[in-house]
Length: 432
Image (cartoon, rainbow, N blue to C red; front, side, top):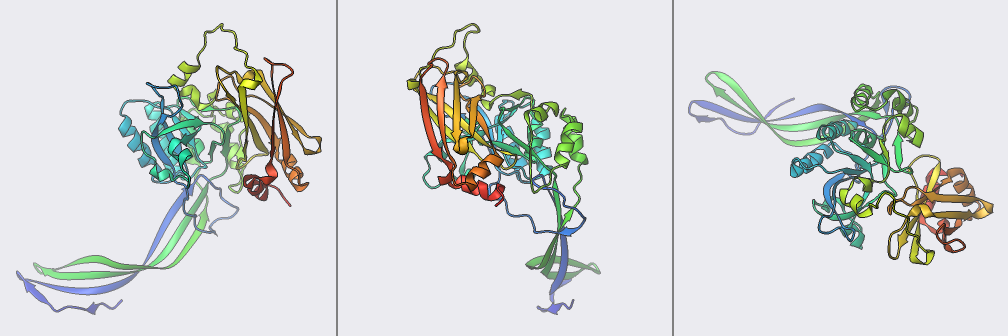
């Protein structure tokens, strides 16, 4: 390193200053621990650096947009997107805005940074908040014609809860575990797998402006960075440390002995969809229901006298739609039939739906609850989905019937082969 003289000496109050330029090669290392991946065999294996986060989590306070709730519409905290190291600050901002007010957290996330999820979870438990696996469909996003930027959402925006399509995978499970009540519908997607830790070493060429001066017989040096250039970068995979996660699950009352084997047995390249039994035995879920049950105003609106007789609903008064969900892991495609009454109350438990597929295959979609938000649900085996797709026929016909109106049937039909979502899912999950 050879400093170059760039100025002449200056005398001021008995001091002399000289300015030099110095070039230094610096080595900078950083360790990243993500809950969306796992350690591959071997240590210090070179890997691709982590990809930029496309959909970082946005945390905002939401006001219920559904009609009929005024003047006391429910509120909740919506947390959607990938967990990053900036996410804890978003939760802290919302908690500060709420003060001592308690609202449930509706979360939907593919996971992300484990360290951030641990910090968020401990803050949630300290505040005694409930967590539900639930998406929020924002009013401004439904009305948008060119997509919706989550970063533009703000506190007070209106939305409605939506359980279908919500997921809590990887490090999101850490946040779910923090809830006083942990609410997941029977069909909810909760997934676990190993963690993924990487260390990136960057070689940088840095140019500094160095100023030296004589002060009372001593040389005093000050540096100012004026340029930086990356020469190289190497990312290696490290063995993740599971001790903090084990301690955390124990702290939260989760059955660590039951949940850790599920997590450790699944590679980061895959994800294990927890069954209803696994969610129960691990104590990860305390209530099987939709997030709607955590909203006081929703419960008041749906409440009925304990001994009230169910109100029959004739099929002509009901509309229905079919919704498909292609989960990121597991061995099923989820089929939902959502009922929409034209008027009056509706009890989904009165209805069943028969789903006819190609090659004589059949499914039966049954009620998942007796609330208006509870859809009929059927699990379409991945093996059957892939086989029918290879055969070129993914058409299905749904026949909806009601105990209250025997002999009357409402028909719905769809052809999944014509949808992009089905094609994308098949490309990822079906072998050729």
